[in-house]
Length: 505
Ligand SMILES: Cc1cc2nc3c(=O)[nH]c(=O)nc-3n(C[C@H](O)[C@H](O)[C@H](O)COP(=O)(O)OP(=O)(O)OC[C@H]3O[C@@H](n4cnc5c(N)ncnc54)[C@H](O)[C@@H]3O)c2cc1C
Image 1: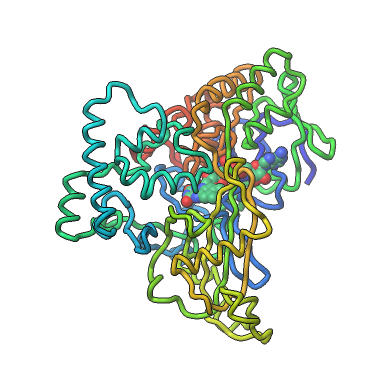
Image 2: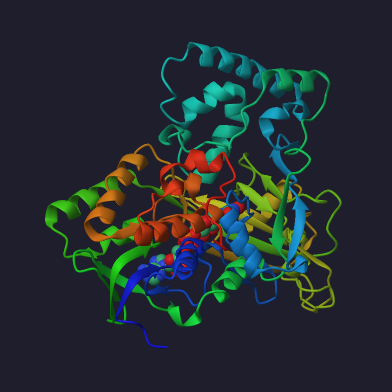
């Protein structure tokens, strides 16, 4: 298949955003289009790796919470059979003070030691007073935490956990992004649960999620890519630069593609750095905004495959949060619980690489049968929170022992470690000004719609469903001039089920 030299709409990236754009362009069928990606296959950060021993690991815990009928239509078309999916109850806990606190933490402080219950409730009372007295909205995420939950829960969970996730202090983050993500505690419920020694339970009775039976999260996006015309998808094509005024993209191999509209899902910082032939004033404005306003963290994904049956203490747990310093990770996912295909079959013989605690001795090199189970951990990194590439795997395994996820004598048969840069788009204090100073300029001057997790840098609309719709809505804007709801109104789309766009109309 030869690369086109000119198309009406060019899409860069075959992650969820680029595939959303391509799906909609194909559906609208109002002009020529092509999609290019540097990677070998579709998926982007929603891909799945497989270790040599046969354990699957996503790029960290990926769970679908769809806000859109269009997204559901596309996923159902790509993986239509009941047996393509497993459905799970969301079972999620926070490891705090050596106990598992059901999520959301703030509603379940009744399981904490008594002195921490007191701190949490005193803080919530102070927070209620703060809310009444406050005249201005909170200036940053830290102030938001203090107003919503108080000093007790801030210090027990919110501050340390969020530093582990974002790799920046909560004082350097804004709070407009929060929307539906953080449950506001009811002081009445917390006090009554605490006095009655009750837990509020997990999420409510219908809180379920589905996960693909085969191929991990990456399996979804490979299946979606298969529903598109294959002669319009070009992989292993790296974009080197974009000529804004000239409306063309130059690839690393020197080929050039001209376009009328460009939907770019590359990092906005990379796009601006490699935007050519732009007048000096415009370029300076764009690059200053990006450099001063946009922050990201890297994500290390660390996976371990373990021989044995799943221990009852793990049971049906899905994902677990870790605010405390005895583990380097902020989240662990019991990935083998999502699909049995995430692990090799029990009949596969594997040698033990190490005991979880290497001081237990050197295991025999003989390959033995399973069964197997697996854990996947996420560790963030930034200049404020460095990570040692050489030791992080060992620290993570020790963290799993400290958190009682695994035992020192457990046999580890597979390990996985990969660093993803960037991993999380930080909702920093300067983010919105930076986006206001870049995205409209790119669109209005050069017909470039920069969209996606790092294309438009908005974490609150940075999940797979959002990303897919950012792409689809960008296609609508390019071809029909329709306003983009997801980019411009995150709270609106997150607060409802969005049914306006459908695959069959
Ligand atoms: C740790 C982690 C946990 C997550 N958890 C969840 C979750 O639980 N639920 C959920 O729904 N979502 C989750 N997500 C988000 C999900 O992965 C994103 O929504 C999605 O991957 C973003 O899609 P995107 O297409 O915008 O970007 P990406 O997936 O980053 O895709 C960008 C694509 O552009 C290509 N590209 C970049 N630069 C170039 C270039 N110069 N030339 C050619 N191609 C290029 C890349 O190869 C890539 O394929 C998580 C993400 C991370 C990192």
